[in-house]
Length: 350
Image (cartoon, rainbow, N blue to C red):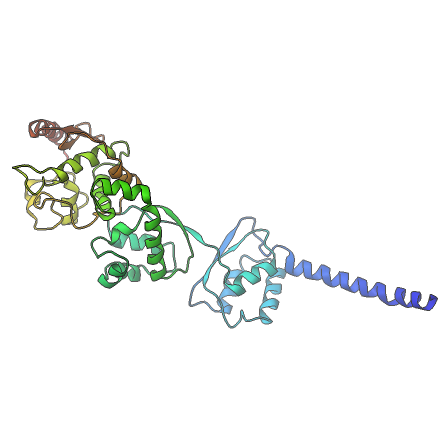
């Protein structure tokens, strides 16, 4: 018995010490924080990156010993042969082993992508591509492709209606097709039973609501006034009488700007109203063939919850506040328009 105890003391203690030493070294190299920075950082790996370029992007962030530990782990894995593209988060506290697993298994961190309310699809493509790995030219080309639009349930004039200005969680390396499918899915979520019921009550489709909302957004940035503006245009859209058997033209100045692609116009002169364009709502009754911008959620909901009134006309207020005077008769409207024109002339605005 004494011999066995002596053997245990002679060998067991050193073995335990070795185990503890190895455990300490493993913790020191593989479980302590990888980053030497105090704030969270992100490493972006694109489709052209290799293992070597991954190391180049990691080294400025890494603690020196943890960087070598990462390389050691990589030498005994498939990471050297296959690097997964994506946006990887490196928090101040993440250990080397856990970070290595993220890169090895492609466990990237999604980002918050905000779809902006912009006028042109090229602008939209540029804004989204600026946050993602996708190419802006490729995205813009897809949005103008009739086949792509048709698969999503739109055409090249209505595809803007698919994008709802909100913030979405997506992966940085999402493909163009994946992004468009995701936007289509989110659009369907947005058009829930309540919104669809309101659109049906107005006898408008979601695309028509969005088109009208795009005009409302262009007319005013004042969210409180948008339901009034929406109600005025809806009155014109639905008016049927002897003078307007096909409906009163919307006569929306923003559609003229869109037709001419002259968005900085301060005044709409009579000579601009003769352009032969389906977006010329002075010439053609009804809604234009698609949105003239990606409208805001406030604009869409303003149409769905429009203020009911009898106004048929509106004109920007002479105080240039961005809000409007509304009128039920053309005579009242002309008086409002004169006051506005005088205000512009006094300020030298052409």
